[in-house]
Length: 348
Image (cartoon, rainbow, N blue to C red; front, side):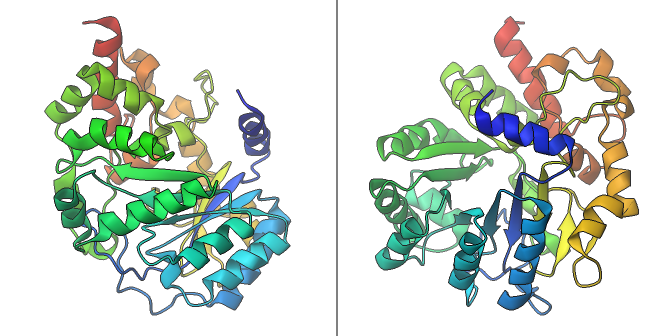
């Protein structure tokens, strides 16, 4: 366990968010088929000044760094002021972007600001696959060019690939491509329902047979297990005692959307409260909803996990379980992955 992991564990035990994802806008210049964001729903978005006040509250809470996201965050007017303000508070920041609108001077300024990491969405090594997913011709070329430029400047660049039924066969080649460019490849299998049902995102989910095929390919399974996916990021690595939390939800992670609603993580479907009516500290430490989520996350509430043969191979996600309305069990994706990994390791 590294220094940052130990720090996150200590902060999580005190329920101080180690890192916060802050959606600054829902606007986007792409229209990805799997995206959970409703890009039209921008009427009540917070202004930059209001978002700066939230950064003050995050600072008071002890947050170490903020990951700014969207939509496409660079479509938010004044977002650079937000970066500068964050750094003036001695907090670090990361961004998640398609990087399709970034200019070289802007990328150079990100480096000057001391950005910790740039996460760039890249879905395939093939233009016809990636551009079909984003619905924008030429988007792969722009994203890869930006990622390469940032990496050559010494900025940490992470490619973020959601694995779907339209790109899962490209994982191995995409992984090699990213490594060759000095980019850290990461992969995730969790497809989230779209806001206001603007897209049928679930139709891009892998079937059980597809997941088994992925994990039974030794090279691909090694890539996936080595990748810092959402499951690994959220996992608290407890010993699964009854009172232990299954993940970091409402402990070391937090998500704030562009309207000021606070969530216990990116995936959980219900907000804890609104920053338009309550302080962050009050929401995080005193709201009835956060107490409900903390109790829900305890391992004792998932009795089926105790007897599951794939338990040692599972990284359960209570937020996905909540989304699928599956009580006392893991989400379907976690279940299939766990058993596929079990078969791979045990050879049965």
